[in-house]
Amino acid sequence: MNFYAVFLRGVNVGGVKILMKDLATLLQESGFAPVKTLLASGNVVVGAAEATPSRVKDAVEQALRDRYGRDIGVIVQDGDQLESITEHYPFDSPEDGVQRHRYLVLTPGEKEAAAILGSAPDLGDSERVAQLGACICWEVPRGDSLGSPLAKHFAKAASSTLVTTRNMNTIDKVLVALRALGR
Image 1: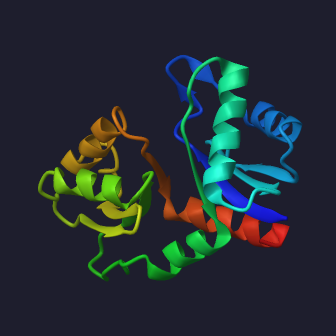
Image 2: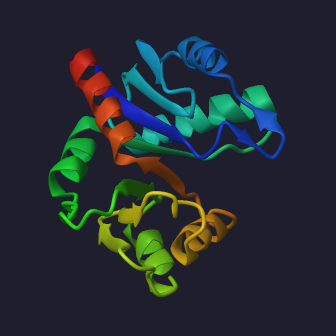
């Protein structure tokens, strides 16, 4: 048995609302077990016979397509990938009195992450960004998570590329759930 974290791009996108209990049932009916949803925002950990994240991605996307009649993108990471991300997240918050949010922007691959960063606007004050493989690490002052030029850039990128953003606290919770399954 292999264990994976599945991140939906959105649970309320384009008029399709996916409830976490319905998602859990769908994935169980599709052969994943165990299935645990986290935080009602498109985070799921699953057990699967599939040996690679790409096969899990294909199976989950097909189940979503069959149920909802449209493509709903997901990004799948195994436990080792998430461990590496948390271990190598490049930013420690400086002790300058500014409260910050730490985010992980998940993309399909290194090429997509590089393209998104390559077209990014200049950073705002106290904002930091770095590529970590297929992910973009982003630190932003609290209150600027939606309004900074970089935040708007990520939102625009999501209209043409599979991109989903998670707070690093959420990534930590997903990793704990994976460990609990025995990843």
